[in-house]
Amino acid sequence: MRNDTLNALILRHGDRMLQDAGWPPCVDMMPVAPEQMPGWLVACGSLDAAQILALVTHLCQPLTYGRAALLTASARRLTGTPARLYLYSAKRDTHPERLADAMTIHLPFAQEWLTAAECDDLLAFLRGSIDAICNIVREDARRLAAALKPSATPRLMDRRFGDWRILADEYDHENWLDEDDAEQVDAVLDAVLVRGAQFCPVLLTVVNEREEDIKAAGVITDVLRFPGDPARRWLDRRVLREVMSEARAMLAQ
Image (cartoon, rainbow, N blue to C red):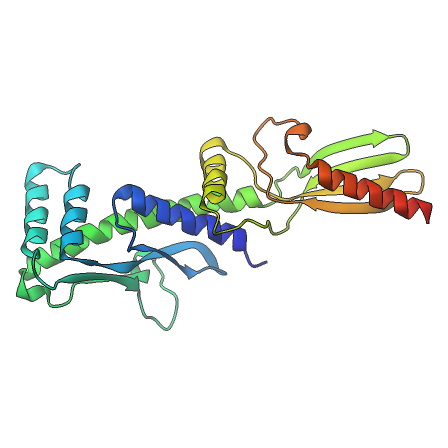
């Protein structure tokens, strides 16, 4: 499975966390190995001197005065210079052992404006902000992945009407989430991470009990199911009508 839905959710989660932390839009997340390890992200982009100062000033707000003053003083020394901060995926022949090793942060020609200690301190501070975000996303990725997969008890509904039996089960199938629809992706993220919702597709199966045969099946995708929700909240009537029509047509043949 390509994990398109999972990767779209993880990337959006990382980008939102960057923005919430105060990083400018010119920096966004990129996956390290989306097929093998979807939750591993790195930040990519570049900032000019003015953006570096604005970012450092914002990130320093929770720090003690002395530490904040040192960092902002270093960032202020870059003002009016061609200094530019770069963040990009580390170039390696193999994948890194640690997530922190997957990203490179670089301030070319820093010696022109900062001492070695000031540069190291500033870069470590900015890297620490990114590392904290990436680690939170990596942990949350497990919850997102679990919400997209069938649970230990996949049966959601079992209804019988005469000779007909309708079953609904969580189904290991790709959703059709539009990764460019930020509003929809945000709604799924908040539902899963805040309210504990499931976003796993549901397989509807129509069985004829008299013939002991499956007559029709259909998949409900892109549906959020919240804990304790009755079937009427998540059941897609359109899919239900389609599978019932297909079952009746099969029976009439």
